[in-house]
Length: 91
Image (cartoon, rainbow, N blue to C red; front, side, top):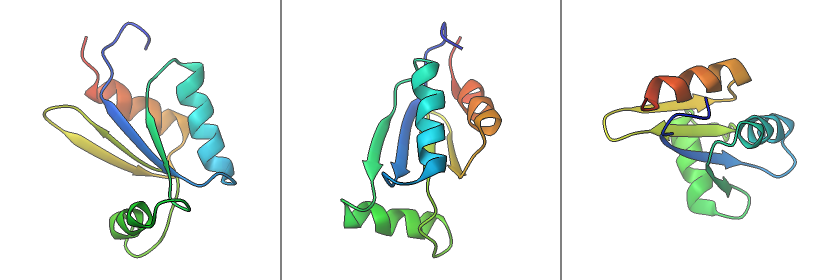
């Protein structure tokens, strides 16, 4: 994955969330850049997560997009995250 141009990745998280820690570790271990927003520190971000997840504050909620397409993942496995990033990455 490291020779690709990665799409923009935005991760909504909570500091005590084990799934968030796992997703961040996956991205960090693969040198994939991302922006993280802790929904406990940003009420507008929390509202956004709730709107994306049918009324639930599910984290991690990860938005992956390039100039042509956007993928939104809620509590993805590492495999789901890798697949979505690969799908939107440029060779």
